[in-house]
Length: 609
Image 1 (cartoon, rainbow, N blue to C red):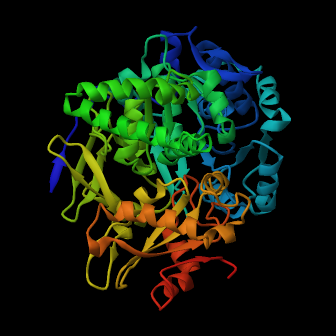
Image 2 (cartoon, one colour):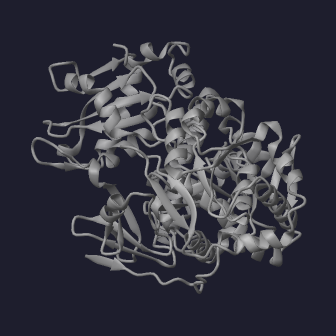
Image 3 (tube, rainbow, N blue to C red):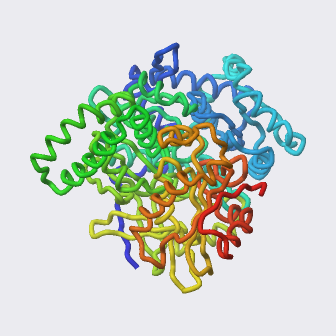
């Protein structure tokens, strides 16, 4: 069993809670912009001191509304400034926030709110209120509902003007580090979501240590800034929001990914937080746009040079001819991509799935280091992350300070340290099962290199064992196939079967452009595209590319293109867009059975079939 112990670099403060992070920031840089709000075509800055004033005013409103220390309050909203404002106000009032994904169904809302014992809830808009309203009669404990679109935050603040400052100061100091800081329900690809109890120390110690470990990211000449667009209800973005308060990073928000490029152009962030699918889409969109303009060959040549150049930089020597080619393509291609992302992005923090070394090297040559990391809700998001000065493409980096890692005999990653959650809410059996002698069992499989950089090799529960006894990790095949512009989702199957196969769904955003670029009817339906020979040939190319990296026994021999989309609404994806493998295997059982009968090697299939 290999252990890597990484001591914290910031002395622990067991009395500190999350409110201290903002109080410390106000003391250091009161007049520095901490947030920026959309304002016409530009952005309006909010200083640290102004944010602090708004937090106190809203906390007073909560006190006036009868919120008591320890009360649970739900929050259902897209990523926006008010999310973090409410988060800190709830902490300052001594209460506990329970996030709800903005895409949650009424049933999921009911479970999160009833299981947590929430007594109040914030809802962003009328549509979310309608979903909540369906189950409100089943939630007798919820006595107060605030709606952001009705101006309830301003009304709350106005109602709290009579609450003395001393009461907020008293309340914010009640919680100690070991007390519950938030209750986050896992998005869960199986079973009912479990409530993860994350403590104040989880946020405080991890934020303080991460701010030091990632100093080059959070402290940049002219000021660091980031544009948050992934959901703050997920621990990954929530932690980054708290880290930005800790480190004094200016934060903007844009929840609508269709407006992301214009927002990046006007906000001009210095680093981004994203999941690999975002980086794949930026690359694929650029490639297809170049193809449409007759410059597809130039783009692909530029991409190959970028990857070759990054590898040469990593090796420590760039040949002169490669330098010349790189300079040419930098002017023709890379500079335009950098400009599209605002022109100032130096780093991107990526998590939730492997990015793939091709894209890692591509972005590296653009001057953007994609710092892949790894973590779960139970580890307050990151347990490992690549550092700007200690960076290895294809890995998720070394452990953060204060985080210990070890690999069990079967390769399962186990974590212990400042970031590990306290328990599952009201679920001692699940809590006991999650720990091995004080180490949290992640359920993920990994390997260390000689320098302690971690690579994720698969998910323990997802390992496929073929009829021939071959162990296959689906991720090793799914990730490279999904990087193809035509592909939206990939589900590798073959447990106890004679060979490996795959279910494929098409990317409906990219499909019309790809079809037009390849001489096909761009208006064909999804059902028509799923049986189109040109589409199948492209999918086969993506599969051949993935198969090149594995043994024949692990390779995909057959595939089916589904004439349907897998989504969160259909119940097949989690809020962070991970596939719910068990649900998909059950819903498409007849399709999978068909693959292993005498059906043709490839076919399109509709769920309504």
